[in-house]
Length: 140
Image 1 (cartoon, one colour):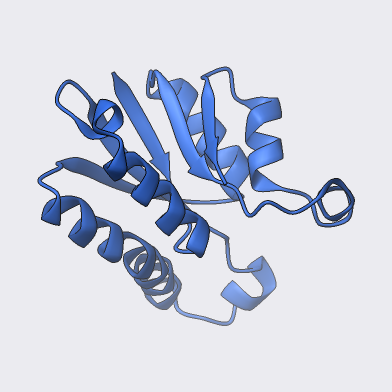
Image 2 (image 1 turned 180 degrees about the vertical axis):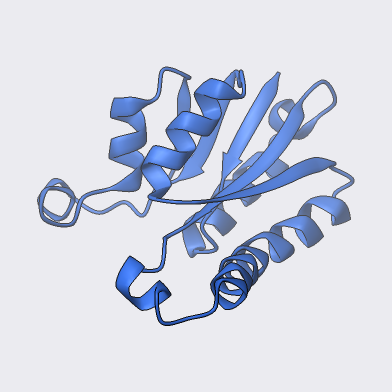
């Protein structure tokens, strides 16, 4: 099974990975993992005042801060994965990458905000569920 692990570096990521590692059916042989994070774009007016290399370095550093702890955890549990980051809104990037990449499943953590908070703040998980044609497993 080709599984996309959508991570954001929060406690939700930690819970989601702990769940997967505790259940050998998910973390056992036969699965190909891709760990994915989306970095929000720098507002274009702010980016206009910075050198392009500096903006690219910001994106790479932000992704590295999210992906490196996951890389360490998975390697410590003898799981190989591909690591990818994209620039854009997380829900849009996760959905598009999952569909274009031919994944069988998207696994992501949920912050567990209530319905009112989701209406006011929006939810990446809710937006991925609405936009993605690939099955999504939310871990809360």
